[in-house]
Length: 185
Image (cartoon, rainbow, N blue to C red; front, top):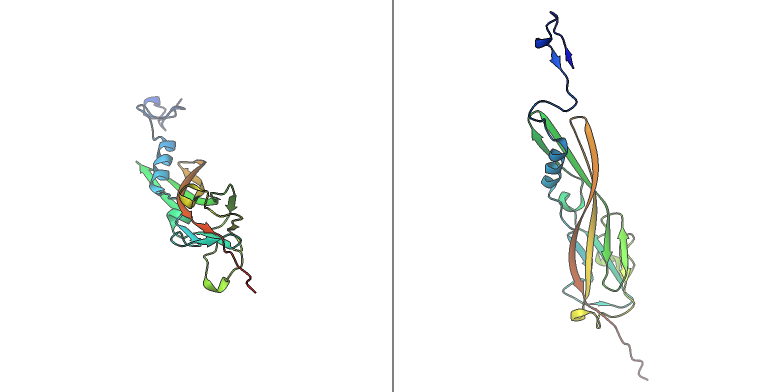
């Protein structure tokens, strides 16, 4: 469709096209993908007690948390531009799912609470687990622990918006033993 200019000349007027300018316009979704890639999202920076270089015990609390940082806990923001069009993507953590190696999966909606010695033997208030058997039968005598972050990403630019979800994963392992107490008269 062509709208004539003020002097009635259709050749000098404004043109509108449903398909964009000849040769193609800016692909906003491709810019959104570039912005998402620039977020450089990572899996959790795993904080866990008992520490992987030590040994935990059956029946004792395990605390899990994701150490803070924009690429690990969010929110993270990045943009991509082409010509006069800029698309901005913002990522936020929806949850972290911890696969504990013993068949348990723990879903934590926050980053978790880092363990401190003053907490003693109490359970984590927001992201914890308790093993009921040793890791002796697990491969290498250790439970494989995997933390998977689910990121929700929203993007906007050039009058368009969208959302997508992606995951990132990190892993460690824990040795869990058993404490035997003998009652000798």
